[in-house]
Image (cartoon, rainbow, N blue to C red):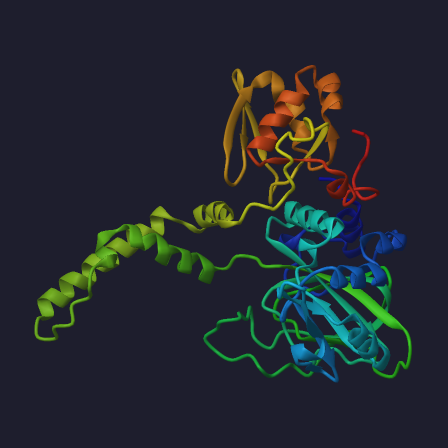
Amino acid sequence: MDHQLIRDIKTALAWSGPSSSHSRFLRGTLPNPELCPRVLTPTRFLDLIMRRSLVSPQIRCVQNESELHPNSLLQMNTTRRGQVTPMVDMRRLAQLMQSGCTVVLDAVNHFDSTLEVACRAFQWWLRAPVQANAYLTTGDAAGFSLHWDDHDVIVVQLAGDKDWEIRGPSRSSPMYRDAAPNVEPPEEIVWSGVVKSGDVLHIPRGHWHRANRAGRSDGFSLHATFGFTNRTGVDWLAWLADQSRREEVFREDLNRQENDQNEHQREHETLIIAASRLLTSYPPAHYVASVAHATSPGRHVSTAGVFGPPSAVVCVTDFPPRIEARGDTATVTTTEKRIIFTRKAVSALELLLSGDPVRLDYVSSEAGVDGERLGEILVREGICAELTPELFSGYIGLTTDDKF
């Protein structure tokens, strides 16, 4: 998928991906800052909040480095039939913004097609699950206190400005559930300064940071964070524990009779041998290749042909599908599917699975095969989605449009 935001972030950070970062803090500026309002604006952010039923902690409001009680922001709307729906009290939110606050909406990509597409483009690039959160800060609000995250974050400043302070990690590769506490930030500041519209930061896991607008009586800041979690050896071992349930030897009770040392020794040796076999049978590479199967399929509109066959489609898999041509066949493999086509479909499949929207008649004319039939199969299998106007709006001006 050729997505302009991802392309510009790569340029801004001079970064090809996590494997080349070596857990370093990076910062830069998008070559095209005018792209920012296309991603999200403050008023569109507020409109997203207004039109949806939201509850804490997905929607949060922070003042003076403290999170406000949900009742400070939410109200219960009751219909005439007695149905109660939690909604953001927009008048109360306006008052909070006037006095200075930070409003946070987690997983905003679930509500907005532009950020949904951006997260998918990030996933195709980073090969890791990605979630977008949005932060709107007004006045001189301080935001969150100095803290660290258990995942990497790419920050894109979309509007306004904000002061940031970045410190290094105080514990190497810390985790949310860890063997030791990680509560004391280091004294040394890696970087501090003002982040303006178009600026980009990469904050690795464990780096302490905070952002605020202290000292500013007016103005605002809007930024999006794209958080991604890389797999660790601990994740592999936890996954191995689940695989061990397949074998009876691991499901059996441990012998607690202390007077039978020989039985204890035999049991321990049996378990150690079985565990060693498990380690070699399921190496880390096997885990990394398999873990994506656990991801939930994306949610997309399917008209089921009620309004006629789709005229255009787009690939919506979490990660790029593989196309392998051998002999007279071409195999498409995703995290959940493996489908075999004839080899002559390869050029058409490359268009359909590029991650960019494509018209099916364009596929037919360019590849010389029945694009409509191929598109129908890929949509039915959940690899592609029919391109509704609402979904297409997330691609306009951000991906290549030569197929339209």
